[in-house]
Length: 123
Image (tube, rainbow, N blue to C red; front, top):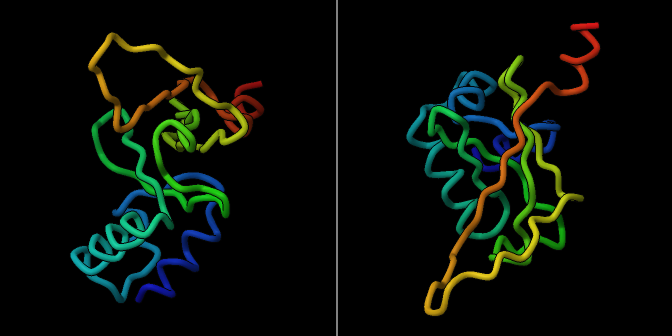
């Protein structure tokens, strides 16, 4: 099952939800897929992104990713037309100095708008 999940993730150019993964792998059950994704996340193979509804979506980490704050935090783009979310790894989140004794563990930066496919379809 882990290999099948990995293959599906490798074929994506945007983040994928548990429901989408379940649809792609019809022979699987939700619990097994969830556990597989959590295992992948614990071992730094995937990172988790939350959409506007609070649902988790997943994307493969790049080869040099350690999924640690602030080194591997990047911008995500949420298309409000097609509801797809894309990793924008080339766009780093700027350093944000926090007040004394504040220690961040993670950060999220999401840009909302229309992706290139939806923008072309609207033209």
